[in-house]
Every structure is written in C-alpha cells, then in structure tokens.
Image (cartoon, rainbow, N blue to C red):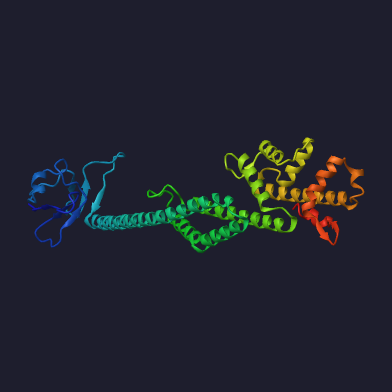
Length: 358
C-alpha cells in the first residue's frame, strides 16, 4: 500500500503539501481547503500529522498518482482533473498575483500618505493668503478718510506687497499639484487653492481700479478746479447711499445720490441717459466720481464765466442801473475787502476777484 503524507502549510491554511511516496524529494502542492469539512483527517492535518492509506475526500488520485480529480462536479457535471505540474504553475501565478496586489496596496498607502502631507502644507499656505486678503480689505476700508495723495501711496504699497509676496505663484503651484494628484477634498482646510486664487486676483483688480480712480481724481482736481473737499463730499454721499457696501448703486439710490448733490433731473430720460453713459448695468464708485468731477467742473466754469460777464461792464456808475441801492451797498461792502488802492483811486481787477471765489 502506498503511503501518503499530507502536511498543512503553516503559512497558508488554504493549501496542503502531499508526498505521494517516500521516494519523492519534493512535495506536490494541492489547491484544496485544509479544514475539517474537506479532509478526512482534518484534525491530524491541522496538527501537522500523517495520513495513511486514504486519499482526501475532496478528490482521488489516478492509478499512477500523477493527477488529481475533484470529487465534486461542476454545474454542468464535469469533473476537473489537474496534474501536479498544472497545480504548481497555478500556485506560482497566484503568488505573483498576491505580490502584485501587495505592491499596489503599498503604493496606494504611500500615495495617500504623501497626499495628506500635501494637503497639510497647502492648508498652511491657504490660511496665510486668506489672512493677507482680510488685512488688505481692512486697509482699503480705511482709505476713504485719507487725502488723495495718501490714498494713492497706500494703494501702490498694497499692490506691490501682494505682487512681490509670491502668493499668486504659490497658489498656482498648489492648485496644479493637487489637481495632478486628484486631490479634490482637503481635510485640513475648507478653502481650495482655486477659490483663494480667484479671491486674491479680485482683490488685486479692486486695488488697481481704486488706484486708477484716485489718479483720475487727482488729475481732475489739479486741472479742473475741483477741490479735494468737494471730492471728499462726493465720496461721503456715495458711501451714504451704498448702505450694503457693495461698491455700486442701483437705479433708485443713484438718483437719490445725484439729487443730494444738487443735480435735480426734471426729465426721466435725462437721468437714464446719464446712467447709461456711466455703466449700463451697474453704477460703480469710480464712474460716479468721474461723472461728478466732470459736471462739477462744468458748473464751476459756467459760474466763473457768468461772474466775469456780470462784472465786465460793472463799475460805480452802472451799479445803480443793475441793482437797488441796498443791494449795491451790500455788494460794495463785500468787495471792498478785495479792493486794491492805487494812489487815490480804489479799483478791483475782476479776474482776480472771480478767482478768489475758487
């Protein structure tokens, strides 16, 4: 009788090694379950014992013990017969598959670990950029109380600070890196590089727009006779009607703002035309300031011309023809302070007099 020895694999209980006879130098590996329900002497197998005279109940050997046939047929009734060489080949492929799976899992674990570090570093950068944006917005809110030159200087410093900090380049780098690694959820921060980058660019655009507006206001003030006090009053009026601090006014509030500055539009189409010239959709602060400076300059020039025309032919002899005695006395008392004495004659240069009002 041929003696068969079955030894349970201590590393994998799903396989057993079979020694067909004592002359075999190497065991044959069988892909059968090494548990009590599949092996007759399951208890001995688990304890690394020896089985004699009987084959496992899950199959039987061929006459020369070179093949193994499963005792349980498939659904179609076929029975699988495997040679020891075939089973050994399948085991090698299985070992290779397991090794590949382990390598893939190790790679995924390493990738997730690297992604976690990337998310943590990106969160620190996002927090820094967000703090800078908050500080810049606070400084922008305080600019309205400064003189135009100081506003210009502060805006230029803020723009240079943001551009030289390299934060935009850092945000671009983190956005590109996280997208390339398919990181769409950062457990360390609710903000995203793209969102903070957009907010940073909007902040820069806002500062650039404010700088252009301030420079235009300075130019208009220097060339058109509008004083800085008037510009400040225009801004205060705009800020008063911009109650939600959006930086723009709707139709109704824009009309109220203009009327508060003395521009009373009697014809509705005139107001609509004015608003469409500024911006057909929204009426932002720099458009409003430009409009007010332009029309205030026009008013100043018109008043200047009117006063000049009124004084051109006005002298002591014609005062009585132009106004009543009481009005003439009041007028003369007011302009006496502006008068210059030349020998025994009192005279007043009307251009200097007109300019003194501005």
